[in-house]
Amino acid sequence: MTSKIKTQALQGMRAIVTGGAQGIGKGICLELALEGATVVIADLNKNKSEELVKKIVKLGENAIAIQADISSKEGCQKLVNKAIDKLGGLDILINCAAPGRDKNKMMDVGESDWDTHQSIVIKAAAILSDATSKFLKVSGRGVIINISSVVSEGIGVGYCSWPYHVSKAGLNHLTRWLASRLGNEGIRVNAVSPGLVDRDDGPKHSDNLEYKEIIKEVLPLGRPAKTKEIAQVVAFLCSEKSSYITGQVLVVDGGLTICDGHVQFLKGNDYAKKNSL
Image (tube, rainbow, N blue to C red; front, side):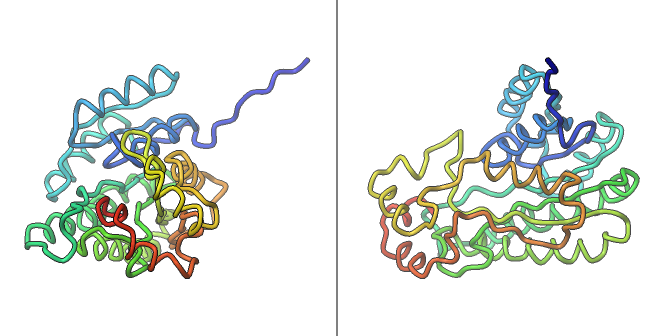
């Protein structure tokens, strides 16, 4: 009787995941590690990063925590220097970090809100992509994945602030621009655009019974995504199975953005308004 050996699609690859200690970033770190990658969990929250490292190591995989503030060029470069020193090279960059979405601010935002979103979502992604490109080129299978959102394409697909909407739209364009410039160096660049996601480490959309019923009516798949479902798409885009995909924004939203009623639903739903959906 022969035993089946599990193959890991990312065996031996080295990754940096910004915003990797919580939310979707945490799910991505776990998935990449389970697929064989050594993951640098780059996050401001040192404690959560170290907790996640322990969890990954307990699963028999490899991870490193690096506390990082990527709101400045200096902070981005420090992260890259530390990561390369630990990893010895790089194959994957995941730009997942984003500011918290203030549910009380939609239009009433100040200059600092704009600065924060532009710095962390767009500027940091651009600087990190530039700073890591020489290592990704040497890798021969370099990949950059930007984590966007369905609000980047649809007006009315959410109640988060307009700096968040605009910064995610800019991230999509940055994805295409980088793909056009880095392709001849063997580096693929794509974005993943999630819709409603029930994160593993926070309140879930489906915990609200009223909202759960509305989701069933509006979403073709009838439920929010699980964090792992977003992370698996990211892992696919990092693997050789997607070797001819670049410059794309892959929407993973259960059909939300194809529904005629999604804008009316969000505009009229108090839960959506209160939770910055």
